[in-house]
Length: 108
Image (tube, rainbow, N blue to C red):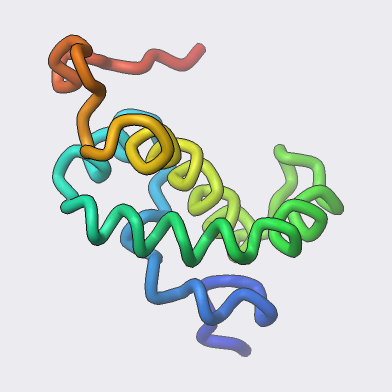
């Protein structure tokens, strides 16, 4: 039995497990609580692996992801969460945006 939290070929990303968050609200809070240097380091690490990550995840139906692949999927969602901070805003929060703490995602 493996102690790996992620699929074997992505074990190098395990250092970023704090970003493997199940909900949009958790990911938003993590982004806002992080420094830009931490966000940029996570962004760079994940972006460098996406050409491998996406085809790996694509082999599974989203509703039937194994646990280790689910954690990898959550990391990709966190990458999407931080990308605007890196690519557009240069800060964790949205420029001229509303108070993100007021945002509560609802899922049906």
